[in-house]
Length: 182
Image (tube, rainbow, N blue to C red; front, side, top):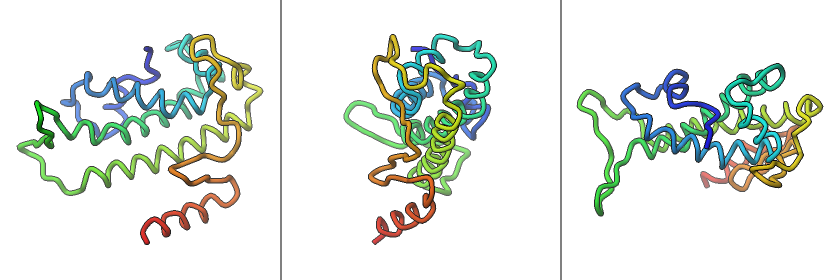
């Protein structure tokens, strides 16, 4: 599978250390791409971006560099932080420790921070695609490889049982967070 960002891109544009093995990062990029980016783009546009990789031009280049790649980066970080911090060996699961690092925050806190960023960037991506869908004729069409995966064409973005609408996104999110803490 072609990846829309590389492990080096993840290291360059995030706090991921250069010492993290690329073989640990690539499967997480693939997972984030399939779980989060493919449903947003839909089969047709997703296949077009994969086929043209990495020589996107014009509006497609803008779509990739401004919206898709930053969004995919944050989803990769949200999905990968826990994986990169744990090791499964035999029947045991444990956390990786570094001699020169002190844990000052929990893995869950870091994961949540990246998940919030990823959700916001996903909303921006969906808004862009809905507003400027005439720039991407493949948007909403069936993909040759990915099949009929309809894109998220509404301004609502489902996040863990919460539909965040365009108008009162902030209120709904605050209310949902308040209810979750109770």
